[in-house]
Length: 500
Image (tube, rainbow, N blue to C red; front, side, top):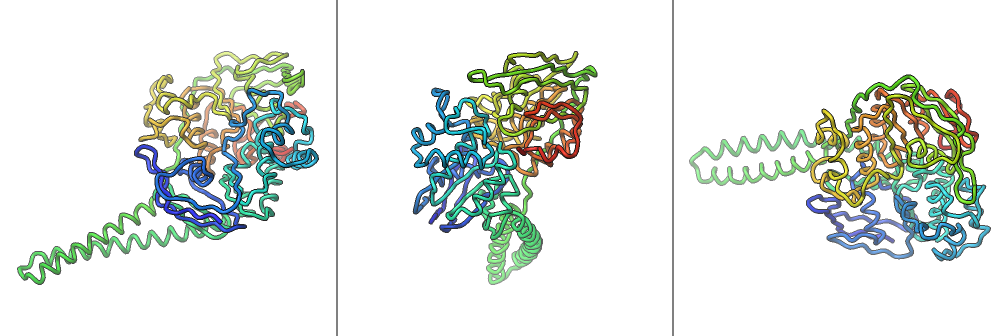
């Protein structure tokens, strides 16, 4: 059904894709994996016809639906804030669907309190993604191309989507850092190797891929050692023959030198294949100390369109070095609360007060602090770096080389996340407001961020849908939404992280 023939693509001097040739059958479920910035989203865009390759071609038979990684930002509702879900799907997007079917999908995606008459302008980022997922699924295409479909989704919604995709009767090509999805219904893995810019194909799910890849890497290391020894022996033999006077032996030496050269080229290729990919190395600078009382919040309320309250009466107090998690389903007001505390949004009622000597930094799930029209360097050059070595610090976030001069708009979701985190951590804040900081990060990068935050000498207020991340961070206090309950964290609350 899908044939990808010798696809190559570069941006400036940076090779993204190189000589990629792949095929995909009519009912295959394929997971595309690789580190942040390897080019996964770019490859999906090329396949979907949203970006042109420099070389090669793609042939496809059938219909195709494509879910972009940041689709909730691309939904055109700013000019029509009163557009309803039904109007958006049926009129704007021309989806052949009945209202009862829309309601059924909304229920499956844990939006029971919404219907066709609910306005898009009232929805959270995660809820907008759900509406776009409904559009994609109702198109019933021969090939679904999904770039991080479970980002910002609560766990029940993600699990329902997993079940749906597993039983989907046609082809699915998906990028996801959600290992549950990649292990449950995937039958083939495409691994985009960032070192050679090509795709390696593995049968089975993600867990099976890791095992086979580990064995393959072990074999390549042994092959590399063998080839290095062989090349050295041939070269030494050629040197010995070249010192003799016989024309016949000199000809033999020339052939041996040529053989040694070919062997060394093979060694170089193997060295690239066994080279370990770079990983983030985060070291959050020690911030100045705040007073013991960091935050007092009393009866915070906020209403959106037509007086509909999203926050009613939120109160809490936070002490120095506390780890507090705000837990609740999509649309419960978690992001709204963090935006109020960050000074990005004005509450309708109640008050909050930061303690003396607090310096508050905010990570937005929408990367609001990045200027997409400017380069990476232009986004960070005016920061107050203090004693930090700028380029060395950015290098810890894998921001180096030509990437410095790239427009932020060209970065992948994971690269934007790393840049936003670099800006945040360079600021010397002793309070961090973190709204879904792991969303676009690959599993290794998530764990590196987790370790850095565990070592951080300051206060953290966190929104996250990742139970493992919340558990391992050592959360001490909690605000449960929509109950707006504040208290000490208990193990049983882990079940509500990312849940309804």
